[in-house]
View 1: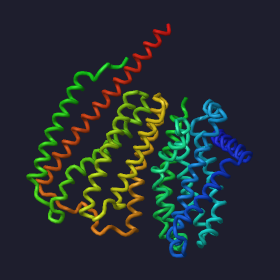
View 2: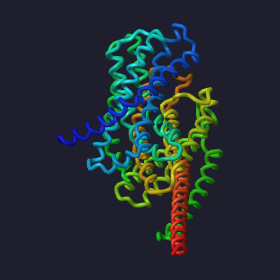
View 3: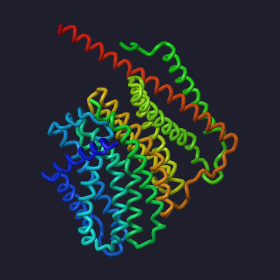
View 4: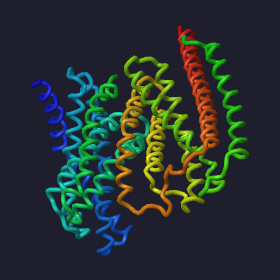
Length: 224
Length: 238
């Protein structure tokens, strides 16, 4: 059991270390989601009444699309550097590799999203209840990372992986996007916990189901 | 080498299904247009229901087959299961498309719109997108066992997602404005309607079974051709 967690931490630490040296993922996710926020504010009207309605949707569209960038990098770098083979022949259970990679993706996406959040507040001028929003962001991003890690490992092995990843990923995470948008809208409107609970339940259910299913099927993705 | 064509009995079965599907479609069309009464509220328009609903049901059945066959393939590592999953996914997308298109045609006169974000429509659309992605993954990758494993994984994750998608969309819809006339199953079916519906369902199911067997036969043949080619080129090389 101790080895199990040590293995997960080793895979995670390897990714964190290489990310700290290149800052590839953090920078590209941050810049891309910032750009989407700016484009959205041109595409949609930004008077006070409209912003109150569209702000949560804009935030999650930006997170979902930029999340795809982070997911793309998760295995693309491994493949380009030839370290995927090293990972595959590592004598640890496959779910150790899954959890290590998944936690890495989760960490990078969360970091970029949390940096973006103040920018979003400033640009769209919305009131924020930070602790509750952070809970939603954590649950939804875990949902993205859980299935996204599997799809990223699949897409990296196909021709045109830039297309394959969003095509596989986006329809499956529809429940996450719906619940994250609905829950954030309620938080931004200052509604009580009770109105959130059904959406938090959907998020938790999605997370539990897909962390389990993904860790079970991951070994078939990585087999060489 | 695997079998070089459909084994005789399966080919016969497939042909039998085709004949039954043809008879069923003819009979059901006659019943739909000549026998069943109009719906009290919708008039004649509702008759599209006899093909719309079976198509939707069969696409669900097809995706369930993809799910089971995908698990069986990963478990037993038998190529035949992979062919079943692939063929069922193709048919599932075809029937889902049918049900989406007929649904849209039906929605226009009844709800006044081509499309509404109703839970069933939206779930069907998301499903359609998931399995189009599944087929794209197959098409965009070299044809080897790795792709079969990838597709199986997508087939499993996609199907597990169905109830989550359905319930999240249902809750999402209940909090948004509904279309003028609420979609619902509240029309009671008369006995004639039930009989006609079951015949149409049977006809489309036979068609489904026939197409599935034919696609499987084609997959087997193309796998055989590939093997023969490889054997030939190996011989030439030697």
